[in-house]
Length: 250
Image (tube, one colour):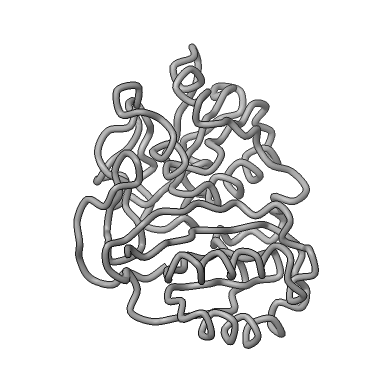
């Protein structure tokens, strides 16, 4: 039986995030899950793999368990499969941010771009005057991206602010569509741009993974493979494994 892989995140106020670490680690260990979970005051972000039933129990704990008391009621969640365990160990970490932009004023729970469902993404990125930006790191872009998307040349997501300052102008770039692997980086990037006067900012709901899961290859505007931070390395249409390699970190 293949392993089930759950990629999940939610921006939510977790002022007690430090106290959640050990109980969450205990739950994951008890279910024999491996992978990585990040906790911060702004929410949770992680990818875990295990037996299908164990993954189901874990998701139920996040959504309805006593540990989070209903605070993860809008969890962004995606499932895929792996023929072998794609992680070597379990890590539950405390962070300043669940995705590092380095701007304390950016809060996706207050302001975020317009979500675009995968079924509507092709029409959006082909619309006149739309600037399409890949918010991932340059090595991820090299494996695959959407036709016509701008590669900001980022070594890390924290460099997005500098890219925006140098290359984006609210008066010139009136319509911006962004995408990333699972959606989390775009939530922060869209909040950042809106706070700086950009009028129309859109982002792909559920990210590339949701698009590849639901859009038939014949209708897809995606070219290449999608890098994932585990031993599968990359996924293609239908979230099929493309290659294998070494353990990757966050």
